[in-house]
Length: 182
Image 1 (spheres, rainbow, N blue to C red):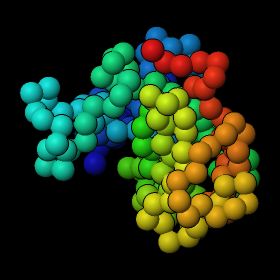
Image 2: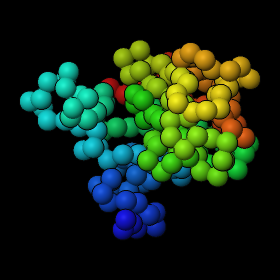
Image 3: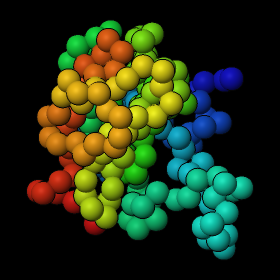
Image 4: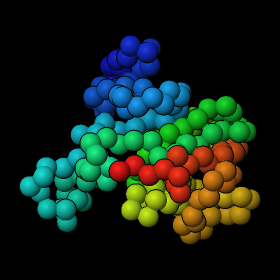
C-alpha cells in the first residue's frame, strides 16, 4: 500500500480516496483537525442507471447530500474528552458512520484496544429528519450513552457523552434546529 501526502502534510491511501480525507470539503471555511477516515465519494456511489434494490450486489448508494448538493458535508463532531485520544475530534458525515479502531472505519479511534477494530458502534445522521442516532453494532464491548448501555438505537442530543472502551466522547452537532444543509 503506497500512501500519498497532501499539501497539508496528511497521509492518505489514494486507492481509497481521490483527495485527502483529512482536509475536508473544498470551499468550506471550517478548518479543524480530523481524526476520522472517510471513504472516497466514488466508492459510495453507484451508476445512475442502476436500480437501488441491487445495493448488495453493486455496493453502497450515493449519500443523501452527495446526491442533492454535490458534497458529503460535516454534520457534527465527536470530541474525545478522556482516553488515549484525548483532545482529538472526529467528523460525522450524513447517514451511517461506522466507529472502530481500523483505518477503514468512517470514524477511526486508534489507541484504545478496548474498542473493536470494526463496527464497534454506528452513529447515524438522518438528513430528512435532521436527527442523530447511536446504535450498537458488532463490537464485543458495550457502548454507553450518558452512562447507560446502548442496546437499541438511541437519539443523540447536543453534548451527550458516549463511552466506548476507555474512551469518552462528547457529541457536538452541526446540523439541528439552527442549521440544516440544503
